[in-house]
Length: 317
Image (cartoon, rainbow, N blue to C red; front, side, top):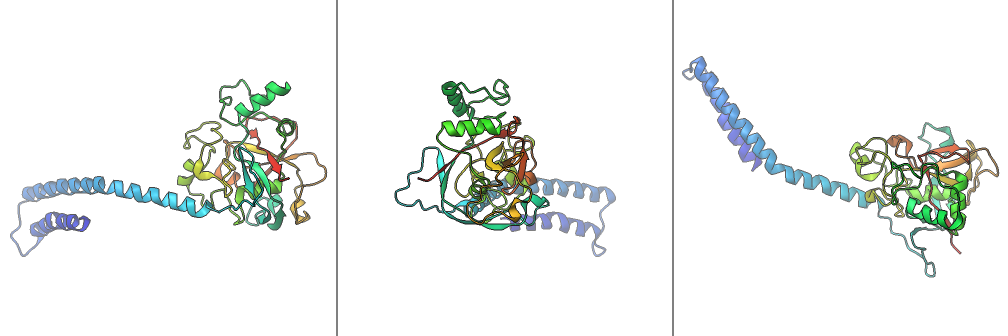
């Protein structure tokens, strides 16, 4: 249909102009020429709009399919759960095995070198700990409330709890009969065994930023935090949500800027001591290049910011 319409445009517009301008034919007056050009321009505009209106649904459908296919291809790793292992409610299973930790292409030296790490199988929370979850902990333990508990920007029940220190996160994890994930566990849960730069894959085009994660700006529909079960397409290979953006997540490890150069190959636990604790994943204030699966930051274990939250892990018996 498109070719027929284009041919018709050519016939109506270009042939008329040729007729007007050809020295082999009798020239029209200037007024007649202008009239013809105006007439044919109107036809051309009408046909262009018609083509666009007919084509748009097909273009939109094809574009949507491309996004869906891309996501499935990148994140549809099939996880086989060994017989006898029961996954706790609200958690996902990450199996034994090696993965690449770190990023040699990063500008941050603390992410280098990329190296093979073996992590024993474990469970990790499918979602970041929400205000609803944390409220139960507060009621049962009398633990001090978080710094931003009454701030309407951050206290929706299904949004991640923020304003919690590493100490608060560790206390919650102990109460829940869990623990904080090690840095190696967190990274494997986020990037899988194929070395993804972001949980969904390696594509950072702007179109994916609005449907895969909550970061700086409001293009993703959230000015601050988003619900912990949002951004289905941005799940990690093990189906954990929001491991890029939303809130930085406390890990168990002390931070060592050069730890990767000397860390053990099997189940690394971080330095034995230190000043700062590790946070991973990026938050709602960061740009896309600061929320990669390998990005590392640190802070004092008693610091409470509205960009800090956490999720828990659990060892397999």
